[in-house]
Image (cartoon, rainbow, N blue to C red; front, side, top):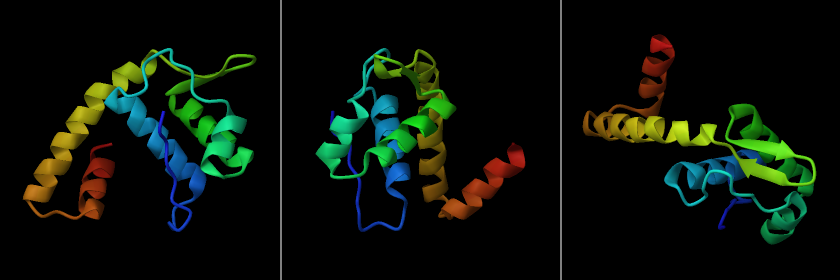
Amino acid sequence: MLFTVDPGSSSPLFEQLAASIRGAILSGRVAVNERLPAARDLAVALDINIHTVLRAYQELRDEGFIELRRGRGAVVTDRARDYSALARDIDTIVAEAKRLELTPGAVSAMIREAW
């Protein structure tokens, strides 16, 4: 599994890591019921603090992408499969927004309004 973070980015590392893992799940590079690396191992591999990894894992747990199981670590949930269709729809929306030359802020505002 290849997850990345950019220490030079203005985005917090835990958000970058959560986005990287989320993307891997949605693209199918990480499968349902697959175990993610142990937080300590991932922290060492990415040269970041273990608490950064744990915070990313907690965010993904709160979103329903993973379960944190004592003794088994972080495991991708069945529910994550349901997000794949939404991800495809979002790709379609982004492509259409780019075609219409809308800004990300405008698209976000439209989504918030619909919500």
